Amino acid sequence: MPSLFKFLFVTGTLVGSIYAGLFVLATRFEPEPMPTVYRLQDVKAVGPAAVPETAELTEPSGAEPVAPPSTPETPLAEVE
Image 1 (cartoon, one colour):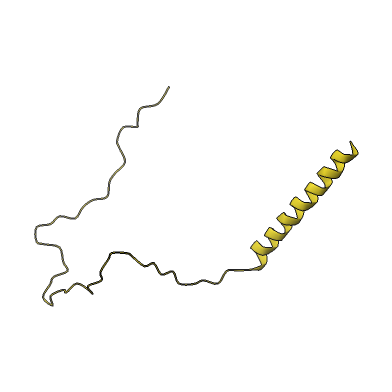
Image 2: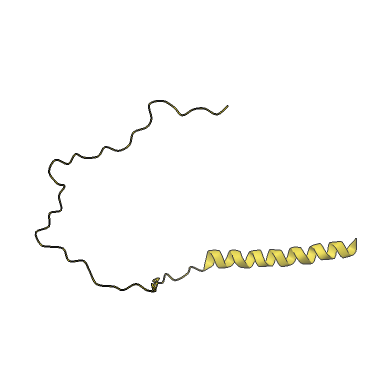
């Protein structure tokens, strides 16, 4: 039995010290925000798309606004 208690004490001490170290690292230190840059393979950048000066940004005539989806009138089937 004494070897079991010694094992549990040593294991508990190691786990506790690791947990305390991770807790201190998580609460005391903040990571520095850095920009993320991804390099895309096999993609060629051509530049911004040319938009004509006379392009209209309004909806075409006769277009009706779309209503948001509504909830169903009848409830879904209940599972028994």
